[in-house]
Length: 437
Image 1 (cartoon, rainbow, N blue to C red):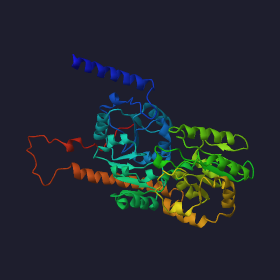
Image 2: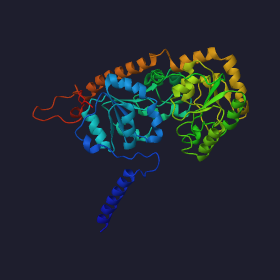
Image 3: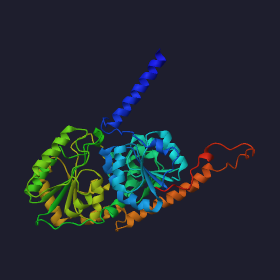
Image 4: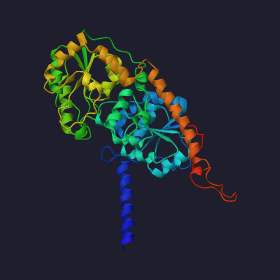
């Protein structure tokens, strides 16, 4: 009777899993896996590029940071977004205006890539579920990540899983070379700048100043997934920092990270306290505003070690970076952390004075301009987007050349008898023709 009991148990687990997914009862961070698999069995994907996103709604900010460049890439090469969560797919269809499919089964994804003209697969994070498309040898796999910073995750050993990593500039290449062993950063890191800085500032209109107060943007990062990446100042610096900036007579734009408090409840409490502190006085809580608008309005940035600091360099305006109070945080320090002013938890009560001095006198401007070129390359409007698109086209051409070599006949072996059909990898080579969306 045991085999029958095992079959029954498997069926019950399968039905239970479907119900959990259908009624959105899964734990946070787990994709629902409600795929379009049945409808995709004989289909091919549109375009030359897949963007693979296996995450849930909590991590949508990682995709949103690439919307502009991906729209431009879609116009040139054609892009299809592949998700594992149907809720994410629904939002992406509304926000991105390009083909989006949800795939639950690895076999479905394998078949789609084999039948399609896919040349590049792009990834905006290091989600462990990225291994599903990474098995494919017929495409070039490119890590985009969702920002360039001196966080430890920026030099994760996971980068080795991808054929190439798009990075912002020379600073990132040097960072990988210094902190990641057995990784050829000089050849596998391709500098493309930050193309989203080009696309995201399009259409941004800065409102007139409400008054003559200087504006300070405070943009702390989240608490991090583990102690080694605990860079956030929200729980340790924020109250004293914000009170000091208020007292100095500045207006504050407070921009919390989207993941604030998801892992450590105390950070959610610190976020609520910051909001209450800024409820009066004409300050701004930036929940649904584009980052580019906050950046355009502010005269100075105070932030933690994060991609916000690196992107800010393109503005030429002063910034202050906090020093993590948690002794467990591991920095992947580069020149920026040595040159720019830092704010320890002990110095947080003086943040207002330091901010006004930097805005008024700005002694570090020339050094920041040099840092901008080192970290971001050419920040002339449109230059980074052009590098991103050109590099994608070049990799697509490289893929065609390499795949022809891999999937073509082996010159060291005799041809098989004409009466025997050839089998194996050559028969699964993707077609160069893609269906329309």
